[in-house]
Length: 437
Ligand SMILES: [Zn+2]
Image (cartoon, rainbow, N blue to C red):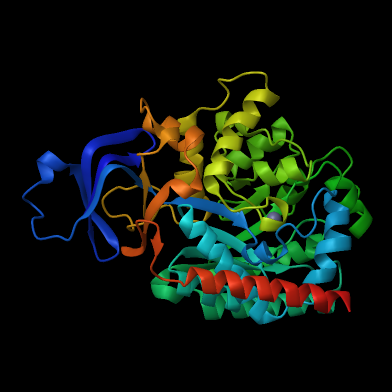
């Protein structure tokens, strides 16, 4: 049983002096302590007096192992950053590097209140191993780059299928899978359609980068000779029959009003990555317009190479303020909408809406506790405001995933923090020296 001075059941439902009752991996009751007292006398108690208990944050687009490239290449444009810095070094990655990078990412996310994430990278069985060890929940996808090369495309499909078959359901069901065709400029239209067909066969979703930069239409033309004319990337991909409710589309910065309507109609899940979009100068996604049109939007950090951290509190604050300045209107998005994006929006994006995103009865016990006894969180008028605008990842003191306490009072119980950091430092150094020789 988790007691809290405040319990955020959902962003629009905050209870004072309440409890969340957990049995095994699920929430079996939630309500005012005065009403539930006595009913659960013999339950072990995690005391959140002076604290706020809320649903675990969901980071719905990242490349976890890229923590190894944190700070390795900054202040560059996306295409150059990818082709001159990131891709050459990625060519030297070994499977165990992905394990170490993902483990570091899990540690960072766990410590800052993220309980679930969507990951796209390669050597994903190594990533799965790290996720299972960390106790977190994740949807993983093998990132597929085809570039019109049939042989390479087939190889990528075989690997993606292998990951879906071998990793789906690992860690007591905490690991699920998707197919990850990288983007419309790295995968030909025929290939995207083929991947979609296979994903349907396995009954899993598709995780893809869409409309990230202004020149993506030109990049599609350059790669495959396809002239989109006046169409945007979303229209193009929709005409290929890719879009539906099982598609997780990362970024979606460059979209027309017509395309926003398509995203809403098809119930596509959008992963908004404000910090990465700002850092790479990709632009500002029209999130307020998407929300008003009924598009499902979640919040994400993207990889640590373009952020450079995986702190969803920072992401929430930036998401909340960037749209205000960009639209010259502080009312375009509220703190409550932002918290919703970071919880239920992310849950939908991971196709785990039935299991996570709120602290309602029947949901998985993915619970985060923030200590309110901090100068920056004093005084307290509105708990949701504090979570979005004032709290930092470091204020997270306790994290529970699947009913298991992963961190209690800032002490991580599942991983040896120093060991993980030492291993990551060494792994990153070895990787860079391999790439430079
Ligand atoms: Zn990405």
